[in-house]
Length: 446
Image (cartoon, rainbow, N blue to C red):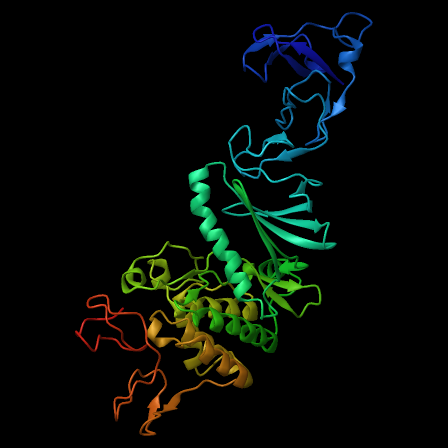
């Protein structure tokens, strides 16, 4: 049982366990200590019976008396305008964890954005069913669309500061545009709507039932996936990357990893989720050469991306690291994994079966530290995954001379054999992928 004692300093009521009556306690409102009065003989406490009747804290279900303003167990605070509460919201900040009123949007302790409580209806249409995750810009929910009568996923972006919200809104809207661009691909969730109102914005999309592949691997249910299955998933991801990289200017994903791949309940199909880090490389030479925001996941990101200079081949490195993790159950360690694979492939005691060697050769190539040693396009990577074969030679379209694959120019006639690559950092002029030096000014290319 709990009793209510009035703080002699701030005059506010405080809930006190009966076992602490007559002892020194700290007021939850003003933080000053005082001694509570002992209960009278024959009475449970020196507070009125009406005050001793309790309700449950909406956050942690600890008994509360009607007069208490704060739960001493979890920190939930009753606003002065409310006499009762039907739900509480726990702050998602791992350093805080305080409980708040259901009507608050910012944590009253740390000012972090709060998720919506279950049952809340947004924009008169979307009823929150479950808070799933919290990200850099906001939260992700499972919700029910009352008009379309279907379960949807809501990705919310909320920011109390109007100026900062305006900056974030551009990136958030861009994510919705990328989802709309990728609607022809079955492994990308369907985009239903984009809603912007005040300092809140929502992306409404298909709700994907399942678990991300990292959770599946870490659950111990499977240690690794069969190579034919992993290769098929790689082909599907390559199709998405081909479309993104073919845009003008190219769009790079920048965060391909098992966490961003959902395994559906059928145990065979996947969905790519979270395109929030995807960005275009810029239209002008200056923007292409400028350092980008350093967004990467350690182990899956190549050196150029860690330095803020990502390009289309950076996505191929991340994809190779992801396929390696799915096929072996071991997380990649950046270029070190590529070097380790190369040693295994060259060893007489190669641990890979002969019919699977092609797969690990593809991974080793695309986990190369130097981008020029990787495949030059998602299209080329997809073709080799489909053929289950590593392409090593290519014919010149002009003189038919057989060149090594990924040579930028035909060694006989000089015809370009690859696609245009990043511009020279010295003169800004275009070179073909695979060139180590600029053909215009002779400067070293990264």
